[in-house]
Amino acid sequence: MTLTEGLEHILRENEPLAPYTSLKLGGVAEYFAEPTTRAELMEVVKRFSNERLPMRVIGGGSNVLVRDEGVPGVVIHLAAPEFCNLSIDKNRLVVGGGVKLSHFVACCAREGFAGPESLVGIPGTVGGALHNNSGTGGLDIGSWTRRATVLTRNCEVLERNSEQLSFSYRSSSLNELAILEAEFLFEQEPADSLTRQMQRNWIVRRSRQPSIDMPAAFAFKDQGGELASELIERAGLKGAKVGKAEIYDGNASYIVVQPGATSQDVMRLIELIRNQVSDRLSVELPLGLQVW
Image (cartoon, rainbow, N blue to C red; front, side, top):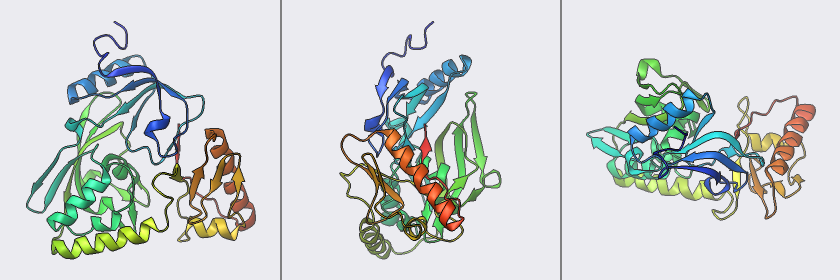
């Protein structure tokens, strides 16, 4: 049996990955899977695990930089309805890992679930947000997480309860292959108040982000209580550019790219920024991107 036999409807070869990332850069995936059911997903994972081939899951692609030479093994995209369920029970919300974070935030505001209105404007999916513990202003998605269902690289489906979960600044213990589902518990507040706050947060955040039609990525994490954008500016790097990649004027934590850019341009710019911040400020700037 070949890797694709019987899975031709969901498993493709040499799939360009640029359209699946916010930077719109990078080469192809050797194999690309879009399973429509959990059984199909597990069959893909089983086959590639048995062959000891690399496996990755891509969500919104907002924190991924794909190398120009592409990605070996399989990249799995969990966008089918099976992975995007959302159900409400009183003040609990059960959400599939493929649900867009924007939909999660809007649903919480509508239902009067307090807290996630602070996450408005952060791109990606719920699965990606849990993996990276996305947050802002002292609040993060881990604050409300009570349970997660994960799929391991050995094709095991496991339940992680609150005692088995740990969240810290921009990271979590959820490092298995895929987050299939998560359960959240919230305090409740008037929905109209949360909706107004969400709208205010959206206006503020959009004012410091590149326009939606501009290929960009949030490239650096804050460090030691200091904003990455301020560290970059203090190092004299505002407006720095390598090839067709440059620091975004409105927020130096972002890298934006122009037509003709390559992933190598971005990687060289990242190296320049991190080296200069280290040399001039003695601060090691954490990378906010996953480089594939």
